[in-house]
Length: 279
Image (tube, rainbow, N blue to C red; front, side):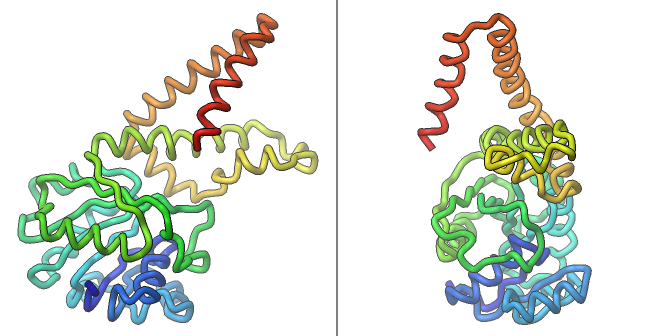
């Protein structure tokens, strides 16, 4: 640390915040953004998220010491494979994807060991998309999960990537890719589906009569539909497992309500309150 050049592929909320934090904290001497829209990338330069940009992936990663891929999860593996032939020896890859097993499956047998990849997931998103909402303090006191694997995760690269996220302000936690996807299905992916379900079940005519409860529950339903559809598909089995558990709880609520079981409803609500209070 610091890295001479960090290249961020996908300069949106997360990628832009990586750039802002890297520059503000002296983690990178130079931050280069890679994306498809020159106007968006030029705006990222104006906002100070990146120093320079390229719409050519090969050119953008050529001088990078660290490549952080912040695209939707269904594109991360492809981006790493496309960039790998163009980086210098010793360049490290990491990412910010909220799923891990699908990325590793996409890289398996295709990414040579000489291109170290350290999977990462900063748990610091928001319902607002775009570099305009990026913040240099987005990762401050937030958790970044690192999921080391035998696929190109050498010890030196692992140490450097963990140091990188810590330098951005995050608290780093290690777990397996399988555990990551299972946990995030319950703590992130299912809540988004539930928020969307509540929003979709509410007639628009009722919205003037909504207050804090509706806004709190449905806030994350304002996220990018295409991005979240990709996450659900990438993490299908763990999400379905979490959904089955949730469905059982809601069926129990239905049973108690239909039976007029006031004491049972209190117990049902108290169990949920105990978990929320522990947060």
